[in-house]
Image (tube, rainbow, N blue to C red; front, side):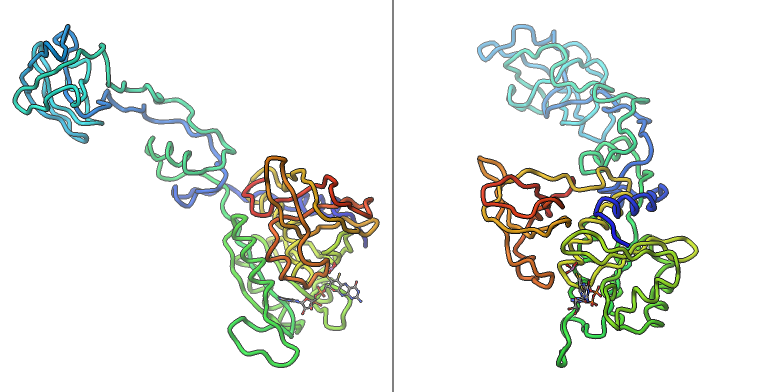
Length: 408
Ligand SMILES: Nc1nc2c(c(=O)[nH]1)N[C@H]1C(S)=C(S)[C@@H](COP(=O)(O)OP(=O)(O)OC[C@H]3O[C@@H](n4cnc5c(N)ncnc54)[C@H](O)[C@@H]3O)O[C@H]1N2
Ligand code: MOO
């Protein structure tokens, strides 16, 4: 089966559904999509309070006060933030007050301490405040019954601020998808161990686990399973209970030991198309188990696995989390070096991109080989070359995906 990139992605997004909403404590909700409108149960501020450290007064008592003719008032009490004192400011008196403290009855304005001699028993005030000066009114920020956040908002620090301020401890959000990452291949060993002849370290499970976590998932990096069909099936079956999505790498091309494709084809719920792209031609996608958990079987070549994640898995994760847009938004860039591109395939070229006065510029890094991790590690972008383009010349405009951008 052959498919275009767009056909394969459409198939994937058609089968992946957003996760059901779940109530989470505020800090767990950071970066997640809100699934309810938030109506405030309280007003903010909740009570009239002082915007300054100073003295709560009746403004008319200070008519004409100046440096040359200051007015002296007796200080009849003190109110700190968090306190509620039954003090009343009667005409001709004042109360020492701190920022955030409730306004005492009778007072209509606050004089900042800088306008005074800072007295404790009595205070000399050298300026007249405008009526209502330095008083923050109850409800001037928002009122009980106001809708403060709309559903589908992505919760960041500023949104958590208002949720906490109105007293919400938990909110309904789309949860982080739980993603299981498995590497297959008899040649693979865990970094930090000794390699025998012909063996290599497993890098894909780190790449894919890290990329999934960066996309917002909770990741279980299961690590390496060799090319034994039963062990692959057993591992996947065991892992399904804790997975909203499974990613494997390796074993999906045409080798004698490419058993992932072989064992999973038998389930009948997973397709193994050849997708018209480079890198990343051999793909697998479908569902597994009673809960129809989506599974991606990505090609083993390290760059192919990473690019496949970017092209197919990341949009699926975003759909699970209800985060629009699902696909990366490309930016336009000028390419600084030319290269060729295979006819009929969409090519994803590793690039180092910088932005300057003239917009984005990109240079290719490393070669095209799907095993070249050195170049991948120095890249921060992919140039996306359409299927019908066979050559890109230096100075041309290209579409660029910025890989370190949070959204889009
Ligand atoms: N006769 C053909 N051979 C190949 C074809 C083809 O069409 N006909 N396609 C090539 C392409 S394109 C790709 S991509 C790869 C995909 O291969 P598999 O998915 O079967 O992956 P493996 O054979 O298991 O491994 C390929 C390569 O990647 C290395 N690898 C695998 N897993 C890891 C890992 N976790 N960490 C680091 N490196 C890994 C592995 O050692 C191999 O070198 O097939 C081509 N062949
Ligand atoms: O499709 Mo493979 O991913 O070109 O190396």
